[in-house]
Picture 1 (cartoon, rainbow, N blue to C red):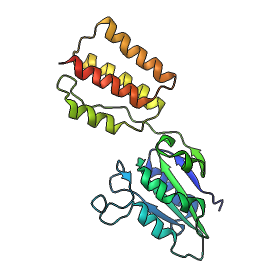
Picture 2 (cartoon, helix red, strand yellow; picture 1 turned 180 degrees about the vertical axis):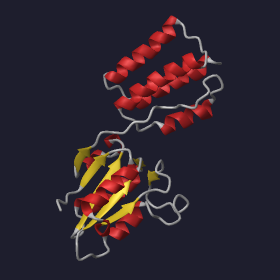
Picture 3 (cartoon, rainbow, N blue to C red; picture 1 turned 120 degrees about the vertical axis):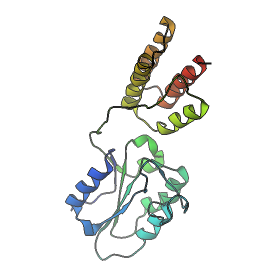
Picture 4 (cartoon, one colour; picture 1 turned 90 degrees about the vertical axis):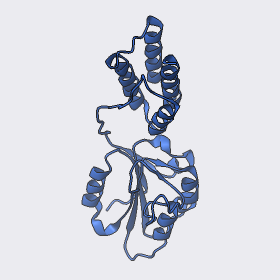
Length: 215
């Protein structure tokens, strides 16, 4: 086996599990996955996962359990708390003998630079589903705005472009009449996304604009 510590950028966790089992064998793998994949990898929050299956402390404990043969610890999560990353940093720098790490996430933007510098990055083609916003723009309140921004806080450039298009389409679909200036607002946001503007800033500007517009 060609064993190296690596971060895999991919969003289909179930398929990636199958690929890793096929490549390395079930007996060599230890999976750490939140019960709800949308949750963050945290330090140690038992209200989040009573079995501590995807907490940083549980990963640390498993790492120091001696094995005669190579053991690969696989961590899959949509996002990672900074304190959890910092807690595991020393472990990643000096892993125990025969222990290797594979971290799977949908974007490298969820990682601290100190973590990225210690892993090989392996990108797989992201499997994208058509975005369904399920958002009533005419009744959107601040709670909806915050929930929307939280849901999409770690998206990449392509996802941002798709979301801007989806939001503009929802205006048409929900019979929200945009004037020329407002249409231009969406166009400029899309162009800024293409130029690598920060997705979280663009999306917060758009949804707050839509929220204020209906007032």
